[in-house]
Structure formats: C-alpha cells, structure tokens
Amino acid sequence: MSASRRSGTTDELGPDEPEQPERDGADLLAALLDGMDAALCAFDADGVVTHWNREAERILGWSAAEAVGRQGFAGWAVRSADAGEVEDRLLSAMRAPGRQVNEFALLTKDGGRVLVRTQSAAVRGPDGRPAGVYCAFSEVHAQIDLERSIALSEALLEDASWGVVLVDADLRPAVVNAHAARALGAGRTSVLGRPLGDLLAQGVEELENALTHVLAEGAPPAPAEVWVSLRTPEGERRRCWRSGFVRLASPLAEEPVPLGVGWLFQDVTESKQGEQEAALLRFRANQLHRAARAAAECEDPAEAAIVHLDFALAGFADHALIDRVVGGATSDTDAAEQVRLVRVAATPSGAPGPSVPSGTSGMPVRYGEGHPAVQCVERAGSVRA
Image (cartoon, rainbow, N blue to C red; front, side):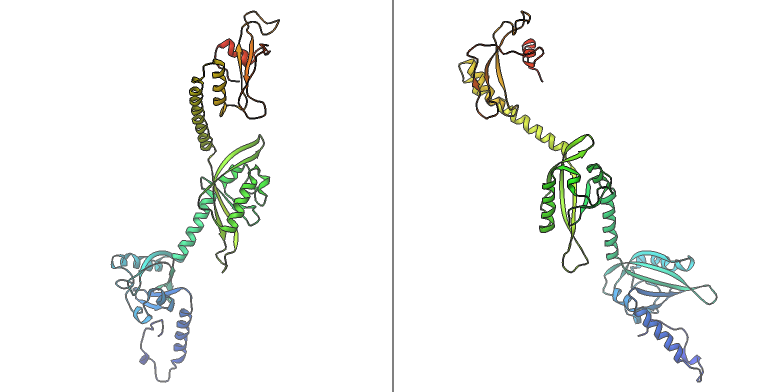
C-alpha cells in the first residue's frame, strides 16, 4: 500500500507517455517514509491527509488506507472536542517560519490515548506559496520521563535544601551540590576527587563503611544519623547529619554496574543536641528525686549528705566532694570573718565507687581567695564555675 495519494488520473497521460518514472519516484518516496523511525504525516492546504507512514500506523493503529484522504484528525485520531484546536495548531505552520513544536493527545484505533510531540513545517509549492504541512510526531512518555529525570537531577544539585553528594566507586566525591559544599566548608569543585578524610576529622570510618555497604548490598531501609567533625579554620566543628543513601547503577548495561552512591543528608545537629539536653535533664531530675528519697531514710545528717551525693552525682559531674563549715579562719592571714572548711567526703578520684568519708582529723582545707568553695560560703548558695 502506498503511503501517499497522488492527485490526477492516469488517463490524462497519452498512450506514448511513460508513467514508470513517476511511479518509481512515488514508490521510492513511500519506501523512504516507511523506513523512518519517526511517525510522519502530511496535509494539503485544505487539511486533508496526503501521507501516512508505517510508524504512524504503529503508534496509532490506523493504516495508510484508513488515514489518507481524511479531513484532518477530527472524529478518528483526535477527540471531537479537541479537533478544532489541534487542526489550528498544525495548519498554523503554513503561516509561520521554521518548525512549530506542539504536544497533544491523539486517539488510537482501539480508543486509547497517546501523548505525542509534533514538529510541523510548511510545504511550499512551485510558486513559493504554502501548499500544505508535513508533520513528524513521536510518543513523548519516554522523552518526558527523561526530561523529568534531568530536571530532578538539576533541582537536587542546584536548589535542594539538603546536601547531595554523588560518590564514585572509590568513595570520592564526583558531584556535590551547593548545600553540601557549604556544609563541608569548601567549594563545589575543590572537594571533587578528594578522599573524605581530607574533609572530615572524625566520623570518616563510619561514613565510608556506610557507603561501602550501599555499594555492595544496596540502600539501607531507613536514614542513618552520622556524627562527624569538620575541619575549619576555627578548629574542628562537630555536626550530626541525617543521611540517606542510594546505589547508582548504569541503565545502559545488561547487568547492574555500580557507578557509585548518592548520599543525601540534612544537618540535624541542633535538634539532636536539644534531644540530648532534654534527656539529660530528665535523667538529672530523676536522680535528684531518688537522692532525696534515699537521704530521707538516713538518721545521720553526714550520712544523708554522702548518700545524696552518690545518687545525684550521675549526670552532673565525674568527681565531687563535701566540705563542712566549722568556723574560724582558713589561714593565718585571712580575716576573722572567714571560716574554716573541713573535708567530710569525696568520691574516689580516677575510679568508680561510693563516696569515702573523711575529715576525722578536723584539718581545714586551704582554698585560695575567690575559690568557688569560698564563694559558696560567702553567698550561702550555689556557684557555677
């Protein structure tokens, strides 16, 4: 079946006029149109279909015999409600220079809808006036998916509010977005190809273990929180990054070939520090409650103070002591109003265990002027030092 319709009738030719060259030219044109990967159709100046190749038949299901000679797409290849708009957009190419690109939905022979992208241009006659329009179209699902993937990649690398780092199979950054570069304290190009150990002072092993696991086993089921220390001109800076990982494989290979790992992270240092501080406050409040209950059961005030210290110490300090005010000067040169402090108990230094009572000798503890212990006595209250 020829993919084109020739105007005129064969009996217009005289008996001695050769028809074979014209037929050969039309057959060659039909063969060329049918051999192209893109779907092709053409319309004359009145909007009648004059050409329809095999790729157009494959996409829409309408054969050349069914398509050639129809007036536009109305009623068969386009919904009636959309026919006028589609025809205007296609035939507008006759009045416009260059090619016109459009996207719209066409109907298949079995009633389905196919989103296509068309490129239309005018066909000029011998006098230079528009004689029709040719139109090439193709399905755009794959094209749109590709464009969406590219747009997503560009958005992640340029506009994302979290860090994105593409790490190659050698665990070195290959692509870094602006947010990640700021988090790492370096330029986007200066970190490329460098070992992670050049950027991080601590947490490198944990991060590299995670990346190696993703390369070998795939993405973990949930994000991981990685604590790292960054090298900065002001010194090391401790940060917590909530990280997600995806393994990247080549879509062109028959077998999955790992290209590296996509590492996405957000800085959650402030929220994690807030959680830790809240947990510490809850623990301290619970310990103080336990300390008060335990001390209330002691008859001896000194014993009660030591028991209270042992319970309350956890969560507050590593080492603590208790001094008792006994009156008198703390040194021969001190003023008479200053008092003596005698050590009652102290926690073991450098080893765990309960507080050890002391002070049986009654010897005063010497403190320098302005020492927090002396300030506590002067203010009759606690002092932060």
